Image 1 (cartoon, protein in one colour):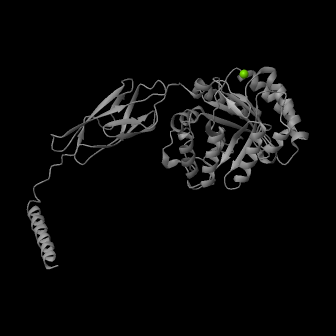
Image 2 (tube, helix red, strand yellow):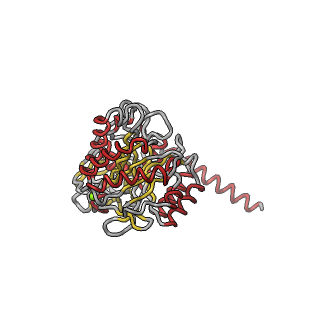
Image 3 (cartoon, rainbow, N blue to C red):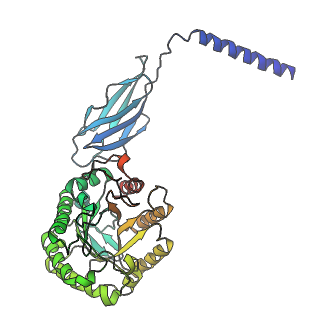
Length: 423
Ligand code: MG
């Protein structure tokens, strides 16, 4: 025991004396020999591309868009007092397979060479990759007959002066494709309420045309949505509108027609199906084959009713399923599972998270379900209104280029879901 104590005292004494020796040399700077690169972010057209650093290999967390030739160093963090032959603002030529980055330690002797590999997307766009969409059984398949699930954004009601209308421009579409990696957008044309299509056909239709043209230019899918709760009251208006849209856009694989957003608690067989028959016939006169989505009773939740009496005279019909995670949970997924089992295809043209938080276990469950069943989904909504589902905070610019600090909690959650979605 005594011997052990003495040993400990001796060790402590030795430690204190060697520490004080070091203290005596404290005015001599210690030269670091660490040459580490700890973080590298790259910017392309305003969008940040983070990298993964494993050993000396650096790769992009997501590939650059097809055709990217140049990008810029946005953030470069090194070990203390190290230097690099690349600095923030430097241009990187993406067409080179790999780019060496040399880091030199403060001692100017120790050097590390990192290799940055810059992947570029193989396809110019989702539509170039997948092409025409076709219902096959309870799935939606691409031109290679592979089932697919698209993830993207619904715009807000298009109505004049409702606010969301300000976001109906091509630069928002470009930004969502580039920065969020959105593969589908939804143009939600308000119909009956103030400032909607029945009030002002020109402005509302032009907003839809603007988004559809932008989606075609970007190669993303686009839903032309008759954003109504009472469509059966104005069937002839819908017939004329969709006939015009089909004649303009029926040759574009980008376009999906959603002929009824959210019917209320009305009869599927007595009201919605007859309405759908008329509008589908009008579309098919001009466009024989693009996908059509039909909303279901009770705010597009009664997919069981559509499953019981599906539309059988057209081979390319899917049915609208909407959820908001605060209200719609396992019971609605169970209902949707039964509808899928009966053989109909579903399309979540609109969903909303709990809002004001990124911690949303129910949305996680829904997304796992969408992934497992290959269900496409569009998040509500591209807007800056003060409410839980807007993707940007009030007063945000309406032309994209949004840094994460102007995204709402819903916006951040949805961006992470959409970006991570298999494409
Ligand atoms: Mg067509």
